[in-house]
Picture 1 (tube, rainbow, N blue to C red):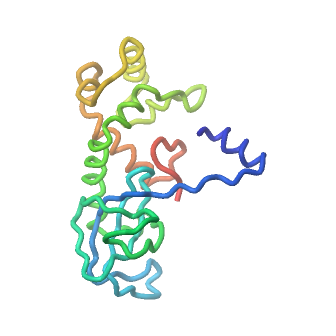
Picture 2 (cartoon, rainbow, N blue to C red; picture 1 turned 120 degrees about the vertical axis):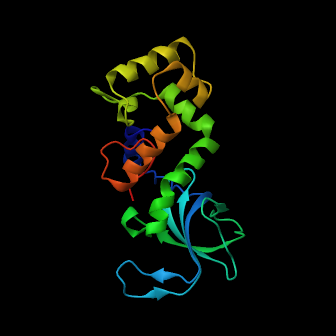
Amino acid sequence: MTQADRLRERELGFEPKRLYEEYAYVMDFLPTGRSSPDKSRYVVVPTAQVLGEDYFTMLEAELKTGTVVEPSERIYVGKDRREKVNRILGRISYQELTASAKAELPVVLEKMIQNQEKRFVHFFNEAQAVTPRMHALEVLPGVGKKSMWQIIDQRERKQFESFADIQKRISLSDPVKTIAKRIVEELTEDSKYRLFTRAI
């Protein structure tokens, strides 16, 4: 759904659909909890800082007593019966991540992107202009006008089928790392264009 579609729905009185994460990947496990961001309280429950699989939402989750999770582990955080998560404490910003979570973020992202190869190959095949002068492909790190036109030319001849196919046909060294870098930029900066994430 485009921004224009969302505005049209609001004008017609429709409430925008809330987007929830179903699965997330662990960035850090805090077995004894941690202080709240403003240091006003300490939560003494096993906690995990996780990254949502669909919208890359950074969340803090209270885990069930006795639960242990590992970095990069995929866990269910949706609304149905959760095996490891007791409740979602809330969304968090990049600044609220622990040092370990910040270090794990690029590793987790690359794993998530590889596990959803079809989704991101589809992005290369279908990405469109975000403004009259800027194409979504140009927002990717290392992709300028020349690379953008190369991608468009190649996908018009034949749709990309895999990351390996993209690497073989265009001058992009590693699509997985390129996408991961872009997502990190969107999570750590006030990005004008959001290709993969949503504002906190």
